[in-house]
Length: 349
Ligand SMILES: NC(=O)c1ccc[n+]([C@@H]2O[C@H](COP(=O)([O-])OP(=O)(O)OC[C@H]3O[C@@H](n4cnc5c(N)ncnc54)[C@H](O)[C@@H]3O)[C@@H](O)[C@H]2O)c1
Image (cartoon, rainbow, N blue to C red; front, side, top):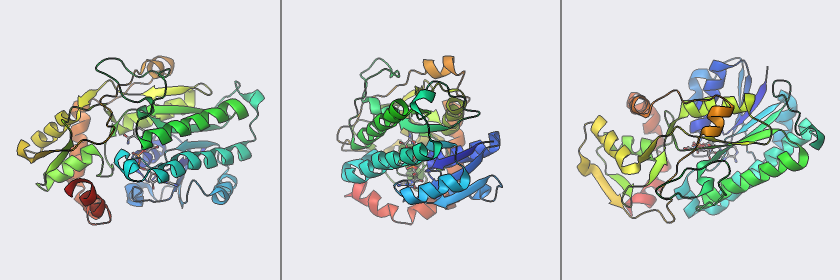
């Protein structure tokens, strides 16, 4: 039985992960989330009363509260999703990205080091079933942009291009240093773009579904030919569990589903599925420093850990679109709040 601290568990991937863990393991989950604009406790309303689940509102920069949580719940696992996660926002306000993503991760690492009392000599003798683990959820964006060919492997040099990806790459390096200097058992995962239920509608897929449903213009950056390697969120969750249970100490694992699609093709597919005209597409000025292409080489995780994505894009994108259609209240509550001021600043002025 594990006591797992999921930070950022009220966000998109974190909430899907909390549900996945409760459904597929006997772990106890402590969801620790500050509930920023991107955190939504309603994402977990269906499991809020589960006996193995506890929500704590807290900041990963709050070392005093983290100390108490580690002690009170005998935490033996950290999966760190907590982050500022939107590239566009990092261009407007980079500082909060460095604070949360870098200093926040450092504060969490310190709490884990203090409570787990790990030793450099234990470095290679980790058995997760009896031990502890710190898993840092990172992103393929730390590798920078690809040309028309090639894929990111775990050995691709870090070359981040946005304040968001720079903060994630910096956090990865701090995490790495704790593995190597203090023998903290752990892994870093670097996943490609996720899609699925509960994604905040500032990100491409829910934004386009929401706008199309409301007959609003669909803002597409530049020529829309930016390519991403899309993965259904549940497959990301199963990959993280595989890395927790079987990942080798200190290793990085790339996670991706071999599913490269251009943004414009996704937008067109959404319009077609919703039976809306292509004339809703509006090309807007490209994001500064917009990476052209990401693609993941997932050979390491598939061969070493036996992980495979279970969902095809064709099926899972339909499940995703249907989820947003079935949950208009979830979307409308966000669309009626602070988020709309931000939307106006980004796309309408
Ligand atoms: N979305 C993707 O496609 C993708 C792909 C690869 C990796 N990632 C990484 O996965 C993680 C989760 O991404 P997401 O899309 O679910 O993000 P999200 O923005 O939906 O959720 C982030 C969560 O972190 C919480 N949070 C923010 N600051 C906090 C703080 N100081 N203390 C505690 N909680 C805080 C927010 O309240 C929110 O619930 C991030 O680390 C991101 O870099 C995301």
